[in-house]
Structure formats: C-alpha cells, structure tokens
Image 1: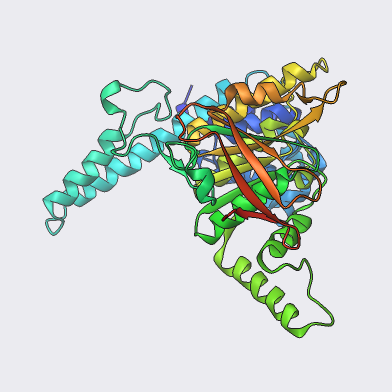
Image 2: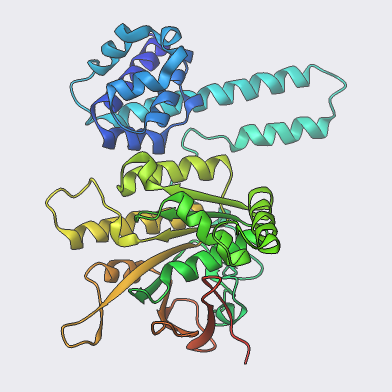
Length: 408
C-alpha cells in the first residue's frame, strides 16, 4: 500500500477513535499535536477536538464552525465517526501518525541542509550546526530509554523552586519545592491550605515565574482571582467609599494582569475532573510555554476513567501516580493540596486518599492553624532531600487572606 494512503488511513482511524471515546481523545491529545497530521482537513478537525475536549459529535461540529465545509462537511465527519469499530487501537494508529510526522520533519530539515550546502555564502559552521540538529533527530525522540552518558548533571545538585517563604526554603536542601517531584501540603478543614498555596503562587508570579494553578473544587477562576487581588491590596473588589483603597485595588489588578504569568486551570470549563483530561491539557500548555511550577488544589476531587468500580482508594492511587509521572516528565515541582480530617476520638487522622499522594511525594508538609489564629505552624513530615529544621512559624494576615514569613 502507498505509504501516504496508509498514513491517511491512520489519521482517519485516530480521529474516528476520538469520536468514540473521551479516553481515546485524551490519549490522542497526549501523543499528538495538530501539526502531526498531514492533511489540512485533519488538522482542522483535530484542532476543533481540542476545543471541544469531549467525544461529542455536535460539540466537535460546532467547534469547527466556519471550517466545517473546508474539512469535508458533515458527511465526512459522519464517515470518520464510523471509520473504526472501537477506540481500542488509538495508541497504535497515533504512533503511525507521529512517526510519519517525524519523518516529514527530518526530510524537511535534510532538504534545507542540502540547499544551504549549495549556497557558498553559508558558513561551514552553520552547516555543521544544522547537520548536528539532523543527527539528533530520531524516530523515537520521546523514548524512555536514555544512555547514562547522555543524562546531564546540574552543577548545583538537586534543583528546587523557592516557596516564596524564606523560612520554608530553609527547611530543605533544594531551597524550595524540589523539581520533578510532588510536594504534598496537608491541612485540616479551614486551616488555610488553599490560602497558603495561593500565597505561594502569588509570590512566585510576582517574581516573574510562570505559575500554573489547577483547581478542581467549587472555586471558580473568577473567585480565585478575587482572592489573589485581595492578597495584594486587602480588597477583593473596588471600594465605593474610599478613593485611595479603590485605586489600590485597580493598581493591584493592573500589576496582576500585565506582569504576572499565572495560568488557572478551571476543571469546570471542560466539565471533567478526570486526571487524563487534565494531563492532556497540561502537556499541551506546558509544550506551548513551559511552566516553572504547578499547584494542584483539592486533589481529593480528581478522578480517573481508568478505574470504574467505585474504589476511591484505588482511584486516588492511580491519580497520584499519573500526577507524579507528570511532575517527573516536566521536571518541575507539583504542589498538591491534601486535606486531613479528625478521627472518631478527635485525634488528627489522614483521609483515606491522602496516603496515596504522600507516598509518592518527595516533600510532605503539614499546616496547623487554629481558627482565627494569627500564627500557623508548618512541619516537615517527610523529606527526600534532607532538612535543617523540622518546623517553622508563618504569619496569617486575615485582612489580606494570605500567609507571610513570621519575623519575631
């Protein structure tokens, strides 16, 4: 069979499988990019699917909008939806599409080098550099197998990203959240788990880092933004009676909108709490522009479509496993909020799902603060990277709804 015809069939099989299953759709998002498709119509359909994010025929058709006719029209979409009997082989066909895409990339680069070699005005050093790029191209660029000699070592040892709190940074040899690891932050209800995570995220965004904040709870993206503005100026909306306070609010909003690179992932926008959906969207955004750190709030609300028997413990273990692998592959810190409850005797007890997160984490912290208290204690429960002290005190500013370093 002609290779281009086989490639076309593989693209149709991928798109067809995506019509049949949400899980196949998220798997395709993780394995492929829009440019991996050879046919322009298939690129448009795949891009529309990323906007729809669910295997819904009507939603995908609507997402195509004015591109529907250029993509083959409704008849072609129906043909794709019936092209494969099941979504079971999505990975196999996605692999064919990905390999064909890489071959095209290699061919284009090789042709460019040949053209440059024929141009006597191009410096030899430039040709050598471009040839090195070609030599580094492989058909399995994302292979998990690495020769030990190709693994780079940092001059400074294990890396970390500052927490935004100097006292917390001093608790671990990485001087902050360890890169490529999960940090589990647990606290009881109303102790301020979300507040301390937002405080850390805002401090890092102010420093110029690219911060991701994923929420799976009932807080909307607008409510999160209001809490962040309040951390800056003490107001969550402009004052109607105090002109100075109103200007402080507007200035805080300008600083946030113009200077911060903080991306909020709102699970409500995709109407899914599945970790597979989140993983696909994270990879897409991280590939577009890498994050420096990601905060994951209300971890207990994240689900997985891999386990269907209602076993919450197994489900949370699977979710924690996927998130842990995401942190490792992205090589950035993932800070996960984990909530504790009281046992029947009133003693602190881990919830049945927090253990799954903490067993995967490289750094486990617990936050303790009594209701209405101005001081909170953060304790290191576990550290894979050593520590100089076991606990620190932070100050809670109620008017600003934020945590800061406590200076005695």
